[in-house]
Image (cartoon, rainbow, N blue to C red; front, side):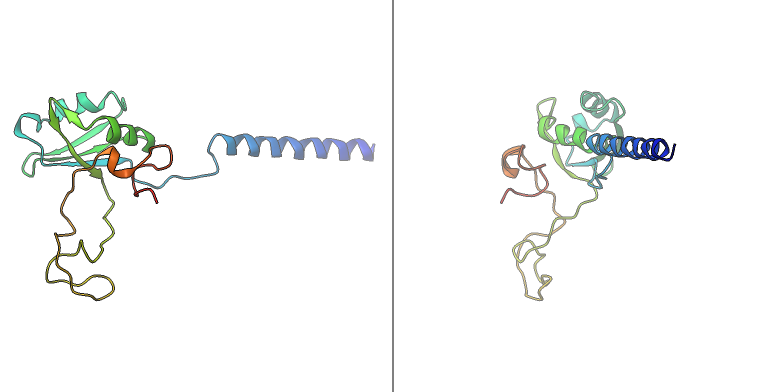
Length: 157
């Protein structure tokens, strides 16, 4: 009887391990905190329309949310999952023949000596002369390297 009880406890422990293993396979072990929203700037007047932007990005995510700022000709496009935003960044860069200037929302570029605003200093205290660090730079898939090796945030090394 004691052996049977130990065997039952062993089976329960083994089942618990199987469940944990299965959850890990499903991605239950990692939390992706990277942004899942894109910021689009410099929208041409003919495409500065929330409905038009939504219909364009619905092909990537059925739950996409568009927050349009017509005054600044910009929009925040929020996706439910990071991988959906990545697909939109890679394949959704043209709308009605207009190139969309996109960047990840909520991420500030790392400031280097060459990127620092003229007349300011870089994090290491050196004076700099370059474009403003808050300028938006159009991105393209080829700039970031191979999609399989890289999610498009950082240049491949």
